[in-house]
Image (cartoon, rainbow over the protein chains, first blue to last red):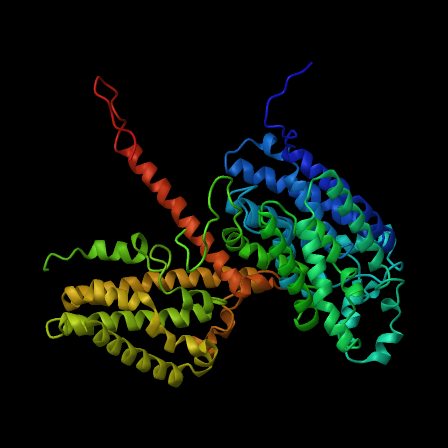
Length: 340
Length: 234
């Protein structure tokens, strides 16, 4: 008989194991993206991952850290995959390179490396690209009409003469441009999916499946995704009931753009999110509300990246006000009335 | 103080106590107008002129202003000087005046100016005070220029574009196009680019400082290890 003394905690997973599971969980979404948008999705990944490892290794050398040890934690590869999956398929090589350098060098290592970064590295890379190169960053294909491998490759290398020939609006773009005009909205084929926007509903369901697997494996807790998606739906509901031609339905919001990807893969980043349970609920809910606000009232069609970065900034404050009671101690008092 | 060390003042203004990279003062104009070299140069020159003149004037009245009212008096002087500079720019370089806009009157709020007035000019004779203002202004101007060049090169792929705004039509040909057909890197032109650029400049200065320190240590000779313990830290 084996005697085990307390604490009876399950063995803590190492960083590399957790990161690998996150990578596996992106597979369903990745597969749907590739099926809909062609081999350009994979080209993004095949270019982003080695570049991320290279940048990580270079910076680690500069910082005089053990390169092999830190490369083994898979965090650079995970950031690269999350960034590559958010970029339009067959993005030009230099775009991905700038994104990877921003994510790994600027957002992670300048703040002290993995575990010290206040912002989600992949989203910093994405936002820098979105702000700097709006044309390249909104060049999505119409689902199912993506170019084949040879053309995707030429798009990636930047030698294709007319990259705009393939571009098509995403459901969020279409809804945004036509909001308020019920007749025009009804005629848009891309908005006419089975559940939400065509194609994109499947992408979101793919990431939802991967996210549920992560939940089941215990890699992430349910608090942030549930709060974010719940808040997004609850915010969208009254406006949709009030004027369905101007405001999209909750279902459309949940299954469009980066909603599921953001809820399960981006907002749950353990380094840059809030930590306590109550804090996670507040953190997720505020992201959900902000996503709706940016999508419906802001200047960009999707707002997941901006919402996550804004709440990353607020995470320390949220943690301060939601610190759980330590066993055997009084509840800490916070704010103007408290002294701690 | 008759034994003012001008070399010390120069070194302080340009490097050791640089307004932008060490004191981190005057960040508002520094970050706002350094999108291009010409904007940076325009505002840097204006700030330098105000710093010199305010140093001289504050030093002149230092015997007559009592401690309790010195700050309002200094601010009045600085505000008057900034108004003069603003009107001069309106008259001489109208287009640049329009581009820089609110940031010219905002020179009043540049902490470097009031800081030098109170910390140095109000305690020193006219000539050292003017020299200190000149060197502080020059140090600020140089950082503005480096940041402006960095952001213009990365953001727009050019250097010295639109210099005719400051130097007349002959300067139109000064523009250097670094990369033909450059698409532009918008983040460098937007405010985040200023923060990132300034951070990199400060990091660069710290690296140089550390290397200088190490070299000075090497040149001062090896520490002789003997029976005595040698203190090696701090």
